[in-house]
Amino acid sequence: MGIFDWLRREAGKPKGSAAANADAAVAPQQASGSPEVAELWEPVAAYLPVDAAEHHVAVAVASAIAAGDREQSKMVVKRVSKANPEYQRVAVIASALAAGALEASAYTVKHIYKQEVTEENHAA
Image (cartoon, rainbow, N blue to C red; front, side, top):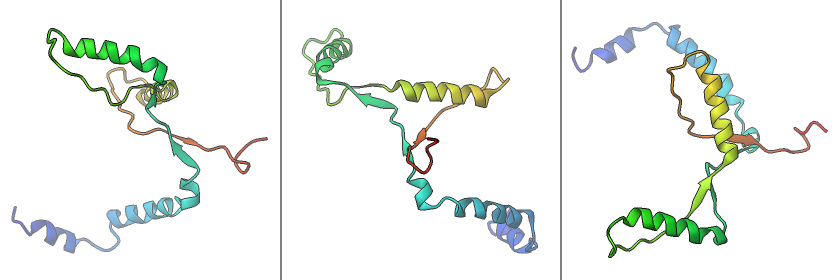
């Protein structure tokens, strides 16, 4: 296959091909994603910051585990976070629904968003 064969194939396709129809079907969905709608959704953090009172115990344990047998090592902990329970719960439910009956499947949740509650979209 030559370097320009793919170009010849693309040029030889009729204008009303399935690829063009697929692009036309996607266009209305992208148009409905207006900035006003995008602002209603906010990302859910996977990890939450830990209170300063809880830092000392977490830092001591993490430093002891990381240092191991090396007493001369120096550890600098810049930030301590804990897993967000809301994020974990939603990720487990979404993965279970996506897996369905396929027990051997595996999914990775990359982003979770939640809708902001305003008077316009609130039920009360």
